[in-house]
Figure 1 (spheres, rainbow, N blue to C red):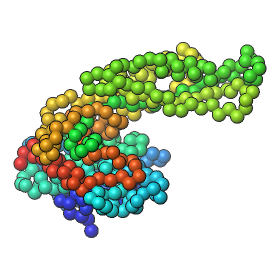
Figure 2 (figure 1 turned 60 degrees about the vertical axis):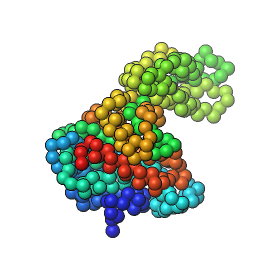
Figure 3 (figure 1 turned 180 degrees about the horizontal axis):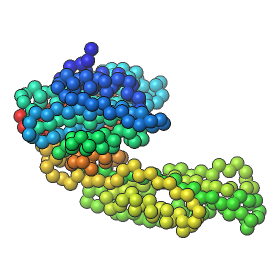
Figure 4 (figure 1 turned 90 degrees about the vertical axis):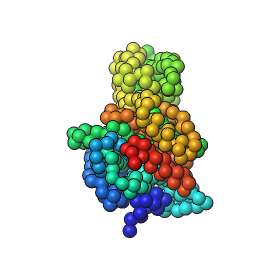
Length: 384
């Protein structure tokens, strides 16, 4: 039996009990679909993809009641693995309540927020006729490669004329207390793999060989020497980090034939992923003309400038908690990086200090408080 759509605590527990580790769903989207359909939403399942990163299931649900604006809630039902079960004080997929907290994988990131969205929507719909449209964009592919999730759902929405006027993503943005921070942008991210091929030879006869390590070290030193930027009013400085260096040479007297490195750049809105990729390729070519460079851009930097949407969320937060949320662009990436191409988007959700950790948890008070904030947002955005 499904929990009441008005009860965010029971709904959070039910979602946690679906062990939806990317790309598996294990019933999480079925539960959300049944609950939203019971509230009158038209639900569409959107499975995309193929192995090894898919297939992935996704859910789009929408309800319309008049000529008002279209507000979308977005989030993900997938979670990261629980890791070593022995480290958990509770079964990570049991959704147990202990000392005022729900403990379980996804409690903070972000099944608690999904439950709060649903419960807030149920309360809003119960107040009278709907003015406008409410949609849910729920992916099962956020914690993984994010290839067959939100970005493909957005293409489908665009093709079907379902473009929101505004969107709130329920990522766990609060830092120390519910309502102290919302995200209005994120830095972009790219990974680069650099492979330098040389000529193998004996270390005593270096003139007969070509050491790829020397060339690769020169490339990395050149890349690291550049100060990408100093940051700006909304973003911290961009940073480049070398994340792997590999040769795999078991011999002490052998110059190897190949050396490899991997790096990541988190970049602000003073750069583009393509521009940084071109720079990396140019540096590599200058030191090793035959170097192979592969770049994957996970997302571009974006900023939803402070305005109507951030003001609506801030007013809702203040009305419930008395706090004025800091507008931030810190942290990693989220699916907001995709949604921003269709409409203004901000992120606001539970405190996230325990996300991805052993004994991930969310307090009952915060889940109920978040539900009240989302309900206040709906009232301000759609009236009623």
